Image (cartoon, rainbow, N blue to C red; front, side):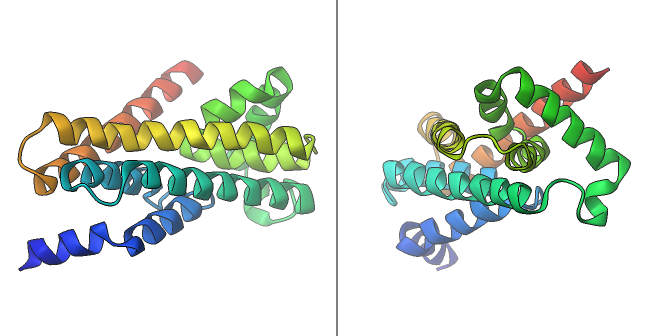
Length: 194
């Protein structure tokens, strides 16, 4: 009975709405599991046949681009020093890093930051505060969000294809792999900073 309830809830349209809300929230709060939601639903799409994988990718891409654009608008409207949390040394260091990177190559930074949770927030706030031309920014963020969504969903889909056992095995394994990839990326970034 619980397995049927899980399958029914993950195949309905609400699964895409919930995933989209998590991805949108992930743009502002790095503890929200947006990546995990996309990877898990990608695995479920392949192992169960619904929702369609293309719908997972499209919904995740739209939510990611919207979240990044909202951060851009916040940066554009309030800058990077208005609130106390923005003035803490750690956040100021991250914002200065983002500014240096944006000055060196906007497209590269926006694409890279989409895959690194805290960097994503800093880069999008600074992009807004720096007043990067909105049409250029939106085009780059949309491309980055689409690439990110396709990657996250494909990771879940590949795991679901390789690992037998249906969604009850594929979803937890794809979540574990997504977390491991995130930890690995964080470790590489920390090592590169040293």
